[in-house]
Each structure stands twice: as C-alpha cells, then as structure tokens.
Amino acid sequence: MALKNTSPYELGATLYMPILKPDALEYIAGTKVPKLRSMVLCLEDALLETHVLEGLDTLEKTLIRIGQVKAEAEDKHFPLVFVRPRNLEMAKRIAQMAGIHNIDGFVAPKVRPGDHEHWVTSVRDTDLYIMPTLETLEAFDVGAMTALRDEFLANAPDRILALRVGGNDLMSCLGLRRVGNTTLYEGPLLYAISMLMSVMKSKGFDLTAPVFEIIDDMKTLLQEVTRDVNFGFVGKTIIHPDQIDVVQNAFRVPEVDIEAAKKILDVDAPAVFKFGGSMCEPATHRSWAQRILSRASIYGIVPSEPQPSSDLVDTVPPRATNS
Image (cartoon, rainbow, N blue to C red; front, side, top):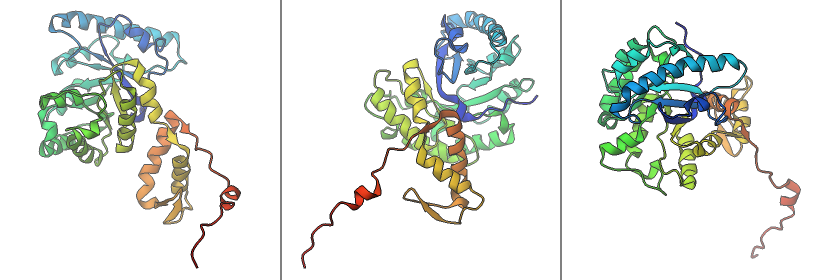
C-alpha cells in the first residue's frame, strides 16, 4: 500500500494529547487551534492502566469521526494525526480498527534494537507511517543506536517519517528532570542528542526535538527551539498550545538563506563563491540548500532587516592616524 507523500518538516510543533481529552476532535478538525500542524493521541504515559479499555473505545470512535469531519470539509487543512499506543500488541489491535486510514501513523514508544521489524509488521497492511521514539537507556549507547539504525535501514525505512527523541524519559534514566532557564543544550542530554543526530541523520533519518516542559518559560523555549533548528531537528514535541507559535515561527527561513540556497542550486553556479558574507560551495552545500527551500515552502520567510545604504556608510569619516 502506497504511503502518503509527507515531508517531515510538516510536523512542526507536535502537540501530545491524552486520548480521553474531551475536545480532542476540535483540535483534529482544526477548529480549536488552526495553526496546529501535527498532534499525537496518547494511550501510553498519558493514560492510566485502569482507563485503557475506555481509551481504546474512545479512539475507535474518534477514528471514525475523523473521516466524517474530513469528508464534510474536503478543502480544509487538517493537522497530521498520530496515535501513540501503549505497546506493540496495542498497536496491532489499533491497526485493525475501523477508520484507521483516517490518521497518519503511529508513534512507537521506547523503541529498542530488535523492535522495529515488529512495528513494521503491525502496519504492513496500512498506509501508516511509524515514528520510533528513542527514549530508553540504549539511546545513550552509540553501539546500540548504530544497530538500531541498521535495523531501520533493513526494514522499510520509508515507513519512518521521523525519529522522536524522548527527552523526559531520557532525563528519567538519569534520575533528573528539566528545569527552567536552561535549554537542552546546557544539560546532560547534549551528548545523547549529538550522537543520535550523527548516527541517524547521517543515514537519512530526520529527528524531532524533545519537549520543553516548563510551559511558562517562553524565553528559554525560544532559545532552545532556535538551537533545535540550527542543530538539524525538523520539529519539536510540545505539551501546550501556547508553545505552537514560538516553535513554528523558529522554523521560518531568513531571507538571506533563501537567496543563498537558490544561488547554490543554480545550474550555472560557480564551484565556490561568496554570498552574504559566507563561502558557498554547491558541491557540499546542496543538501542544505534543498532543505532550506523545503522548510521555507512550509513555514515561510523572515524578511531581512533593512541595511544602511552605501552612501550613508561612505559619509563616515576615516579615523585620524598619526603621521
């Protein structure tokens, strides 16, 4: 079955939501938060064991209702919708539900080496993507992550829209919790995310950045997501709608980068040239340029700040020198 043609950049700020949240369908329908690009209906950590049966029943009704909502408004933009099952067995059960084709995929929790092939089997008869979550002790082990990457490559790699980095679970492995006024990049997960980016992205797998759970600290969130973008992440997990604009605005592309990308991709571009104060080398910067244009097509462009005109600059007198 053919997969949907979806760019990982379309994920943007991915809102996690308990399946039993009463107004979940309003988010899915785009009426509650029209700017939302993707969301995850969670039946794992956000659901008590005693509520699992109720959650599954609610999910099946929601899947059917999603199809009805989309049929009623064919031209409307809807967020990408993923389901996070509790485990692989639950995923197999959900994959058989009526209306399963109305969502975009599964978020696979706590994926370890040896797990991916089974997740692929669970969705084999569907058009669903899988987003494995790297959030166990193995995520600190470069050998284990290399083995997992090779497993991804050997088992339907096209099924993976992106890999999700589970920051809270990784912090829990260390007996720690995120604090305000400190980004991910000043904390103990810096090694892990650097290693995961190197191991996974070097073989073509995109990653999304962990949640920043201090909801009221928008200043640090902005600092963190700015670094997420520069680090190469294609999206970020969020837990509150107030975080959407901060995250998605950070993925807008500066106008100077657009201009540089177009010049790099120009068929007549020289082998090496200077633009915007930097060296441009199409042979090594082509992939960057293609991703910049892809990002801009989804999030738009940040206009350049007006620069002083050259005639004004020329009127500045030279500094006096001693003869």
